[in-house]
Length: 258
Image (cartoon, rainbow, N blue to C red; front, side, top):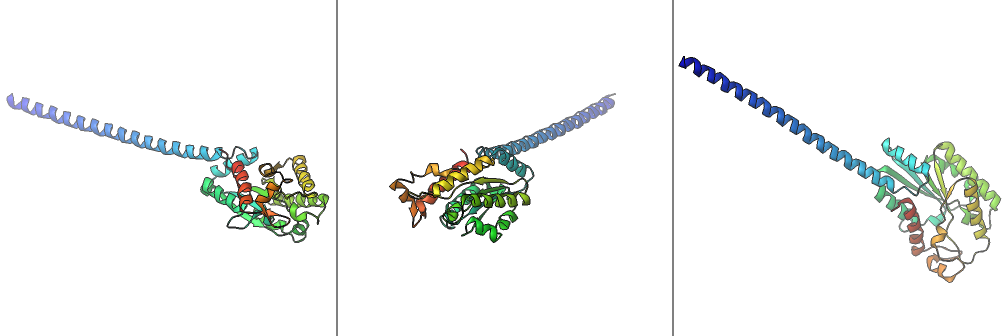
């Protein structure tokens, strides 16, 4: 009898050990899974936060540009931005176009690709030499265009200039139907007479064609005052280092909203 009880006690103890070990394994397994799930959730939340933060910088962009940029992020494709215009864009070391390019890359990282194209031509020469095809070939999603009106000054009529802009934009949109074009003038000049009329016409053209017009002239001193000379160099006047920085700051504030 004593021997039988010993055997039963041994069996009961063994059963308790087996069940206890099994319970510990299950508990450990659940805990490990929960920890892994929590880590995944934190990583996902962090990624969503980064995405939301980057998208918030685009709130001043046209709505269609905001949406196309968001689609590019979701599709894991780089969003292509093209900055194009005359030598008023500046040199690579200090020009506003390159200052803006660097700032965009710094802010949006690998989600965007920025290219700059400069032509020392008026808008009619751009058409005659078919340079507009080079702009279209970029197949950019967003194009910031300074449409050569300062180069047109005294050489191309306003009517012809507008026709040339039409041709450039049509070519860009033919290559990429969803492309969004933004227009802006070149820099202001000191006490110019006909040039401001050209700029007003460009603004009217943009408004009548439902194109976003970036009026950076609002950031410059009055072109009729001597103060404007502090931001220009040479004749008729191109931006100096201060002028390029002023122009760049205006555009950075637009493209990278606080």
